[in-house]
Structures are given as C-alpha cells and as structure tokens.
Amino acid sequence: MKQTISRYFGPIGVLIFLALCLVPNGQAQASGCTPLTRGIVPPYQVATVCTFPSTSSRVTISSPGITYWRVIALPAGTISACTLSLDSSANGTTFTTGGVIAAATIGSCASAGMYVATTATTPTLFAGINPSVTGSGTLTVVLLGYVNKPKV
Image (tube, one colour):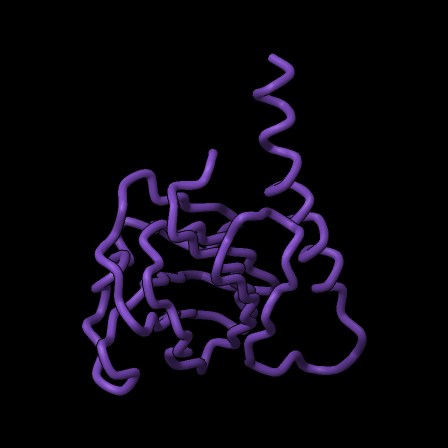
C-alpha cells in the first residue's frame, strides 16, 4: 500500500503546481512552451509545459531516442471539446499526425487527465504537440519523454 501511494506523489505534485500556475492574474496567457528543469519526475529526457488557447497550432520539440511518453492535460476555462495528438517528424517540418501517439489513444483533454505510454513508441527526431481545443479556455500540457520505460 505504501508503494502505491508514494508512486503518485510526483504526478500529483506536478498537477497541483500547474493548477496553481493557472490562477488568473487579469492577463491572457500566451501560447508557448517552457522547458521543465530536472527533478520533478526524473529520469525523463524531455520535459516541457505548453499552454494552448483555442486557436493554437502544433508545437515542435526535439525528441531523438524518446520511446516512452507521459502526457498530462490541464484544461482551464470553458472547453467543450478537446483532442491532443503527438505527431512525428524526421525533419521538424513535415509531420505525420498521431505518428507518435494518436489523439484517440490519449483520449479527450476537455477534462484534466494523464496518459502514460506503457509500451514503447517508435522514436522520432521531432515530436509535435498538436491540440484541437473548442471553447474559450486554454489547455496546459505537461509532456515528459523517456528513453527507458519509467516506473508508473
């Protein structure tokens, strides 16, 4: 029982931290990504937080050798529908939609949730975080990438 509880501390801590970051300050949040520093849920090799308004398009990140992914979706405001795929690209320009993880696999991001890859994906040089948000809210995505399978 103790191991079960302690393995959730990292992801729950990240969710609480990000929820607190979403507290409005009277300004619209800009779309963009911010790399996370190591130490939250090691040993990841790629870690980024992106905030997407409803008019967002794909964001490209470098992902050579990454085969396991953890995707945390945190919607804020009014979002009636939301999908998210992780696209693949060899050159960072031409993408295959859902080439890493399809939107149907991740599931709806209209409510907070987390997807953890339990089997290895095909590595790609570049991954594209591709949201489709319907509504006036924003979607914050935490993306963690691993070379080796993380402990769940």
